[in-house]
Amino acid sequence: MDQQQNGQANGAPLPLYVTLILDETGSMQSCKGSAIAGINQYLASLREEEAETRFTLTLFNSKKTEVRHNAVPVRQVNDLDVETYRPDATTPLYDAIGRTLSAAKQEAPNDAKKLCVILTDGLENASQEYTRPQIFDMIKSFEQGGWRFLYLGADHDVWAAGESLGIAGDGRVCFSKLEVAETF
Image (cartoon, helix red, strand yellow):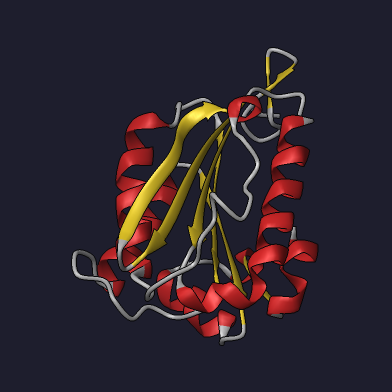
């Protein structure tokens, strides 16, 4: 079996590169506590992985796209709290994905398992730099390079939204805002 297929390189787990694109728009205010808890649970599980795990966190809204951590060892990533996660403004989803993936392309090692998680409760409504077709093509190109994508969406048509971005059906998860923490 190919070493990439079984997640092993010379008997050791392949490194893991995780990019999380986290919606920090105003509509996330109603599930802020649950979102913080879910992200922190996810970080805790990544810290327990045997494989070396690098982590990138992008927080976005129409006022900013902030790369909080960029390909750092996950053990160096602090948990989110009410001071570090402050939902506000509208949803430039395409810009957040495009900017994050453009940077990740340079950071992710070729021999790593690569995962991009997009967590949002709403649809695109504020991008100025990237379009849906550009993001669709970018995601397809990244998938050909071994990336896996997960679209975690609350309170909207996740199946249609994920499909419009080129994310496979098994990479789309729909949940209620009340279940953000349980989603991870």
